[in-house]
Amino acid sequence: MTIIAGKKAGFWAPHQEATSTLAEGEGMTQVGATLEYYITDRDKAWWDPTATTVIYDGVTPVTPSRIDYAGGYVTLASTPSGAVTADCYYYELEALCGAYGVSATLKSDTKEVTTFSSTLNSAAAWREYVSTLESWTMNVKRHFFYGKASVTTAIETADANLKWEWSDPGTVGNAEALVYTSNGAPGVARDANVTTVTYTADSTTAADVKTLLEADPSLTLLWTLTYPTTDWNAGYHQGAVNPSVDISGGTDTSFNILADSESTAQTVTLTVAGLNSGATIAAAMQVAIRALGGAYSAVTVTYEGAPVTDYYLITSGTTGASSAITITDATTANVADDLKIAVANGGTSTAGNAGTGAGKVGAVSHTHASGGRDSAEIARLGTKVLCVMYLDIMTATLAKLEGVGHLTGLSPDCTIEGLVEEDLTFEGTGALRFHAV
Image 1 (cartoon, rainbow, N blue to C red):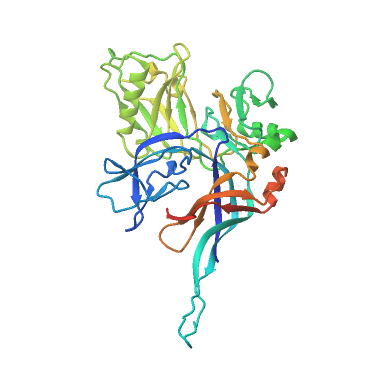
Image 2 (cartoon, rainbow, N blue to C red):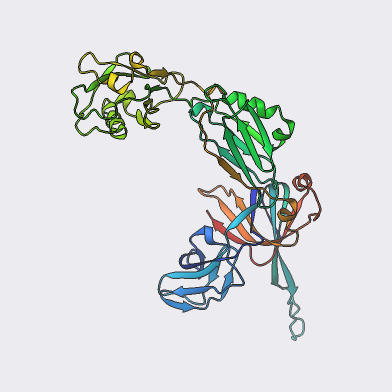
């Protein structure tokens, strides 16, 4: 009997209603100098044992002496003369659970085969045995079955990027929707599977939304909400609305810019020929600014909005409290007034900050967090599961044990909380394979 222990392990299974997918011409990798090969693309390593698998030596189909569907292993009957490939049907797996405190027990039944000589006084000195059937079990002490989903919302300012983490397993096939609306008083509410955040544009902050969520005890059980606490927000300069979008025929070409902690403003000069749209002007501004190098090398310029409500947005390439963009008029050939950038022309500069939660909640696209399972699907008591146990054997890479096992030692009607506390046992069926990763 051999016992192998590890700190972490993962368990996967195909969805109960999943069908296998055909993969043709998949490459196989040889195990050392043996006749064993495994599928190189490990995302396709859970083979459907009920479907036909064809192994090729070059272009010739061959019959392997053994196929292990867990892990996509084959043992050839003889040395191949060409590249080994496979046509196989595989399942896309979903995570069943993760675990800490894992041990695998490998054992082999034996049978005594001691023989006795018929010659007088020639007794056998030792008993002899042969290995017969091999088996394995995998035992888990601490584990977690929780299905989680997380999403970072696409909010106007980086400091307001709220990370919503779904913390309840929910129901089979559940898809949570997260919707932002600017109509009405600020609030957070959930109806069916839709969580709606109501905010006041340019007023409600990331910290406000977090406070609203945490004031609702039922929502707090479902969602965990965080916003960045490190340097996230970039400083920017936003021009006034309705600027010129065609300066191709003019003689004004320049404006001044000061980025971040620089002490001296730099003059930006445009080549105006062909600059007859907001997008082309913004692109030319970005190229000319970045050509200054240093703090200016990652500045971005975009043309935002639609006619009449449009403006030019110039954003620093850095984040944090020192991130800033200041635009002023050039002393000669000033084009800042045409583009309505610089404070003198109606523009505004906003400095970066260090993730205080003060970022304003702005225009947000609808986002969906998919996930969720119930205990009936998760438990899968008595069903076959792909067991993968990672081992640190003090080499340059991790190793893993991989095989198919039946989930046992678990009450079929236990709760989600019980799943976390109750020991699990996976009883092996077939080989337990060693594989370097």
